[in-house]
Length: 333
Ligand code: LMR
Image (cartoon, rainbow, N blue to C red; front, side, top):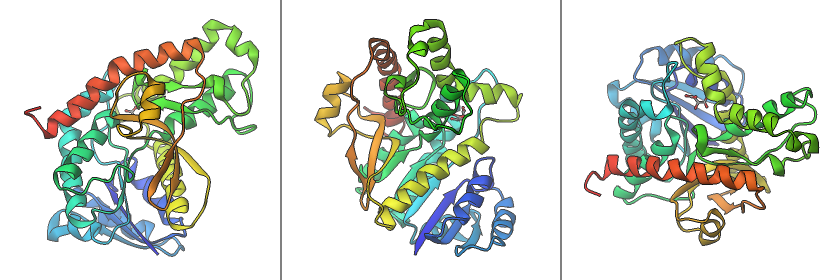
């Protein structure tokens, strides 16, 4: 008996994600919100799928956000504008920061205890924005706010298999990805792949560098291919659902040992800060999920010297993106 709210449900990610969420048997109430009136049609359409969730569409009119959020236990946010070729995720900040702020104010007011999963870019900044808004409202729980970085893990698995000439599905490579969700802040730990990737890949420096770059800039590949019509929507919906369904099983279905990557508040984790080597407030790591959300942050483990350099590059950029998000809510800092 879980109510899920999807904010930005009529968009390119929102529509396929609504369809995937409708198929989750733990969700009994699926509230779809968007500023675009099409959301009512999306709700009517998805509502015909023969699964338990009662599906309702809400716009801003008639207090739609309030109705969508009241009673929600999980809120998933893909709302916002996508990139065009030549843009970075940070170029979306001016528009998407305000959208996320306003939606999170709704969360703070109507469902302060909900799990919040943020997909809207730039995730490296929108998650700190969400945290600040929730802090100001006195309802921030660091265990319940997640930046969705699952697509980086999905891409690592697919692209690594492709790089070594294997079919993408067999075997599935599980590769931790740490840092953030943008270019150089995405740090795939290929040396920790399970099953291991072949030694020959690590010996071929050019091939290894090309694979890492492809994972880090995988989003650009889709943006270019769509030629101005947006960024990844289908693979992002898949990844967003993968994370949400892991969280739902761990939080509401007593599933134990669920580990999923996520960009979360790590300021209070001194062990992790030590491993990272500098203070940072938000960072993506494999997270053990449970009834209260984040149960445990997994350690980074042993990084190769190449991965240590990637981590340095990541930290050079990530701190600034976090500060930018915080200062958007607290301009005087
Ligand atoms: C992605 O990784 O594909 C998304 O974050 C969308 C984007 O702008 O690249």
